[in-house]
Image (cartoon, rainbow, N blue to C red; front, side, top):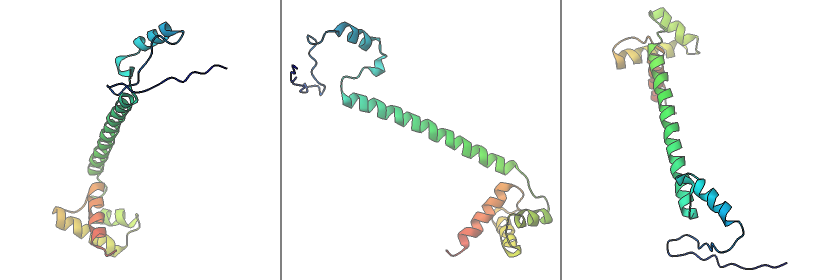
Length: 138
């Protein structure tokens, strides 16, 4: 078995030297190389890393933007969903979700104080529940 060690030292630009006189099928490799899109012709691993990192960042940005849109849509839906129009409706809504009579009163009072009106939408109730929970010692 014949083996030959090739010096794969880097050139001044940071890429590896390629001896084009070596190899038997240079035409096929060359045609494959040049048929690739420009963004897939990498001369060094650093270039490949930079390209992959850039694609990942753009992908992450799209994912975060998409998640933000879902959150905003959820908030809009919660504000639009009216679940209580009377005091009895407010009491029933919270009691069916496991809140005691005293907690229900505190939640409604908190929304009245902070918003200046009684809670009507799911969003209003969530705001009141969150405010009451923040006031509880941990």
